[in-house]
Length: 344
Image (cartoon, rainbow, N blue to C red; front, side):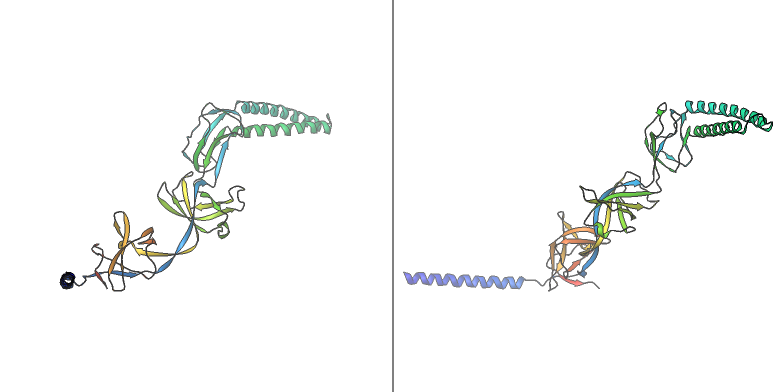
């Protein structure tokens, strides 16, 4: 019985071996040579890219003017609204300066009276009817009243308030009928010809920044990037934030407006990076990938993590390294397992 079992096992093993040999022969006979495809090929190398320190800031005017009245009185015929552009010398509003007009009238009356006395005492002095001392007192009174009359007349000029600069009205605190007091801010004007961006920089980067260094300003609200330069570094950090105020000057024709949000990019050196042509990247199910060649010239698909665009290239953050050979075709027909022939 034992011998029969051994013989049956041996026969089964021989049958399996025979079938396996037939199967391997069929697979080898059915194996095909790899398909050759022409494609663009590039060997990757590290490049130096500028490294930036990013902060946020606000566009502001380098020249902001607060308009107030030198006279007390009620506002009459205000001519501007917030957002209006004004020119230097343009009438902004007028003040009904009743008290100043009365003071001027009184000063003119006093001057006329002093002039009469001056003329009379001058005649009496020539006749030796009055002393020199009496004449000098009358003359001094005339000079004082003349000065007061001129001062009152000059004050009346401030009843009409005009713009000292070409600018934009950014704040308006009064309306017709409001009482204006000397020194009270009534309007605020921004000069758009001198715009800058104010931002704060951490103390670890301040040593490498200098006045007139180039800065890149991005305005998200307008989707535009503007060249600027550092105009001023306030070399005193905040006690709590330990950050330094930096003012970057914009070009007069930048087209931005005061109060806009800005992203500031300071160049702080170089960093190593790997770039691949944007045309070589593929997007499958929302994931980026690329074909990489092995030593036998075979294509293999590899996923990667991409960064920002740099011209016609894209930075690769993970998935590739220097020395890798990538391949791509404009029609996107490249696939894993094909043998690449570099296009000339």
